[in-house]
Amino acid sequence: MPHYYDPDHLAKFGTIAEGSKELATKFFDWYGAVFQEGALSEREKSLIALAVAHAVQCPYCIDAYSKTCLEKGADLDQMTEAVHVAAAIRGGASLVHGVQMLEHAKKAGM
Amino acid sequence: MSAPIELAILEELASAERGPKRTKSLRARGSTLAPPEAQLLVLDDLPLERGDFDTALATCGWRELRPAPLEILQINVGRLCNMTCRHCHVDAGPDRVAENMDRETIDLCLAALDKTAAHTVDITGGAPELNPHFRYLVDQCVARGKHVIDRCNLTILLLPRFADLPAWFAERGVEVVCSLPHCRKRNTDSQRGDGTFDKSIEALRRLNAAGYGHGDPRRRLTVMANPAGAFLAAPQAALEREWKVDLALNHGITFDRLITLNNMPISRFLDWLVETGNLQEYMERLTNLFNPATVAGLMCRNTLSVSWDGTLHDCDFNQMLDIPVATGDGRRPHIRDFDPDALQARRIRTRRHCFGCTAGAGSSCGGATA
Image 1 (cartoon, rainbow over the protein chains, first blue to last red):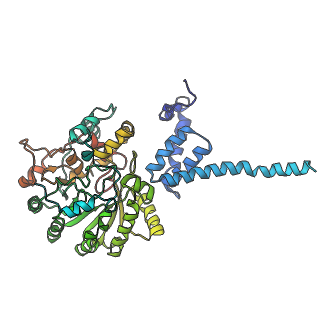
Image 2 (image 1 turned 30 degrees about the vertical axis):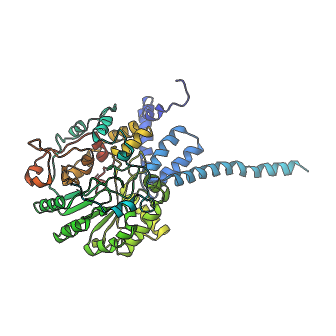
Image 3 (image 1 turned 60 degrees about the vertical axis):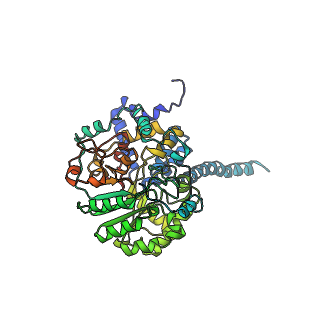
């Protein structure tokens, strides 16, 4: 394994069942059910998945959900906005901790 | 003989104002992929694990593909178009002046129609409205009580000489099936040329004003959505719901139904797949997603496709690949020799491109099939 990330691993995801078929079956059944159309459309769920993929910075998920989003009818404008939502939450999550910093600094400072 | 096209029209068609152009036809570019046999060779040469269509059919119980009762006569009246979209399976464009159905062939189509119980005549192109005998053909089909479909690229309706068409269609109860790859500008223009989306919206407004898209079955407005790229069509029902909301909200437009079509790996879309390095992955996707539930509803089973010169084909895609219907005597099948019984007994001819119609939810000129 010359790289930590190998694009071929995405297609081999199912081989994770080798160590535990039971847990893999539960996971993939649940995973499939999650992405079924429900209160949210498949397109909306794919856009959420794309945003989360960027938040957790998973290249497999980014590969998979870039294509899935297109195939569910999203376009580049919508996908870019979804990624900005992830980025804004990540950035905001860092920045809002600044309030903790502020309180520590105010308490310790003069 | 091709129908002669008025010079004034040809001059109009060349301009971007009269028809957006994303590319040039393969023919105009002198592309090595212009000949159908070159396209078939590229497809046949791909290493695909599950790439034999007849084997795929056989594994789900279809030893051979035979027609169901004929419902639709699809007449491709020519390859002339005011647009040159990137994905066009016809390789249509303003330069295709030599392949347009003449009046004699149109009359042969009508005579053939009278020998069948087909309820629908599906008129396509190119931009079919550009054929000088288009209105004659529509009137003759309407007079025979047939349901008539015009496959419309929308932008053609903005040409001054065709400005009356929405009302003209409405009077005759013609269904307008219009191409719109996306309900938003980006993917529409990337596939069909800059300015297409705005022109399409204007054309849809005019169709709405003529009574189309408001639930009247005699003025049915159908949106045909095909992907702007190397991926399959979105789920049809969900897309219809979302686009109805989007187009109403953002543009005040209504339509009656939406149908989806996968891009066929032939002609200009094949050229694009090769050029962008997407061909292998796209074909793997089509073959991996072969869906047995799509086979019974394949359009080659209930439709017969006539080309501008009167040759008969199992579908419009086979037509563009120059694969005519199989005949017992090996002669090139022509509409003048139309024999409904012999045609009903034929075996449908398939090649690798057929995976485009059987992938995922299936794909046809009538939309998803599974």
